[in-house]
Length: 308
Image (cartoon, rainbow, N blue to C red; front, top):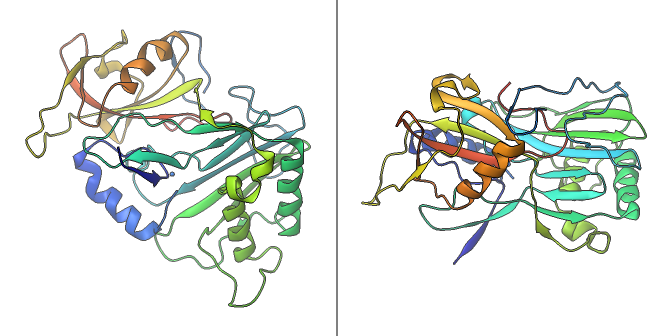
């Protein structure tokens, strides 16, 4: 089965394909709540600022060494169009979660594609912090966007170093002048650091352990109108495994036709095996006989709910 590198699982709705294609053209190579056990999580977001000393705590996200990192991208699109964009890199509790995943180049492709996880050594974390300081990113400046084009993809990095939180924004595509090294604190310095942390397997291969599939503690789910059959492929139908019907699921995203929820605990144990066997055309049928398609992705430690 042929594979291709993708920043995120492919979105499964033909209705959103046009807008997503626009985002890919603009982006070039875009690389991508707490709740009680046994239910869907109540959407919430960590209250963090560049000067805050309180780290996000949705799932025990900070390592004993006091280091946390998450790098993700945004673009000026409706949230349902970027729903499946995984953070490109997350480091929490001594583990590195790589959000740049291999997606089979078939249609319909799998609904679920897992990111990978590896341990990262203390030496590797020290190297990341040292590089961030070298590039002038751990001072009082948080905006490294320079002069981005309208509609450009923005890169975000949240780092917690010894209890201090840094929320950084910049352009991943910024480059220094030919033949020069980026000046510390410049837009190109942010971009250089971005390339390092989103390519740790090439930058710090000796500091990473063996790769395995990431097992999420929560799953972001977007229920949407059934995907139309294409090329004569008949969608398969699967029973919706949760007790909550689609009409009452989570919160509306844009309108009631799109329902967003973060699933945890016992409900996660029921849902994840089902979506792992589904494809992009699978239709899920709830107890009211309503059919919906799904977009799903793993949630990483420290990440706020996409449903908020």
